[in-house]
Image (tube, rainbow, N blue to C red; front, side, top):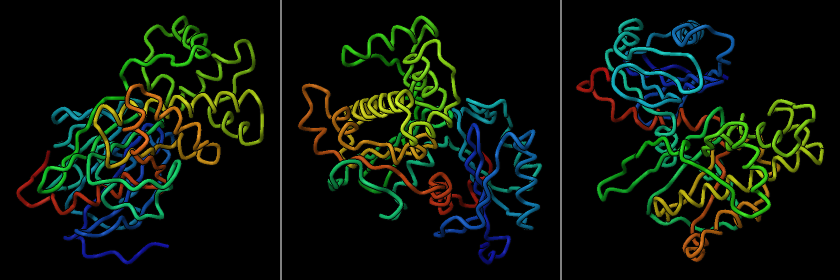
Length: 324
């Protein structure tokens, strides 16, 4: 049900623009996302068309906007990593009449969301360890693989955006070597995103089942939930690799405030996520098992954490910010 909309002057358009799906909503200072609408990117030709469609639906004209985008943010020109959408921030603001506009990386928004998620919007992976006030890390396999950290500064928090999903990645236990050998022969360079994403799940299935019919990632997940052995093997390997990558990030940032897993693929696999296997892979980073054993891991179950992160930034979007 759509909630009552505040006056236009106080509204901020918030959006989480992914490779496959975009979410739009409205926010006011100190509030949670309202009037959320999910758009399949395949149904619109451009980002501008998606924005126009949403604003027509809600019937308002916000004066400001905060967008989280699945791609690097370097100046005025923005390009999505896994979709051929590009836009200029100033041109977009001028077209829709935004006097203030901020564009951030989608995982920067997810990191900010960690401050506003309710307990019911996450579930512990493994035992319910209590996070401390240290660095928090969020990662998420979806169309790509995003990584960001939320760092305490003494007076507040700062988000470190990254392209950590594109680091080199390789086998751990000996039995994984044939899989990575196959991937290397097929693709050459192997990044974490190449195996920990929707397309990555498909690649793992291919590596384990060379010569068989190749279902799409969504079908692989459905098959695994139905008990198909080949699909189960692929999803089990995916979860083990995800746990190992998460443990590596925990060490990189010394993330004693917790490691959070988000993203569409992780959400789809939630009922298949073996906590014990994930934690074993997370902690097996000699010689730091004892440190990692104390760091909690959680799955973000909220359907729109990116919008919650954008809403958390509304207070920072002052009249002096302008467009940028």
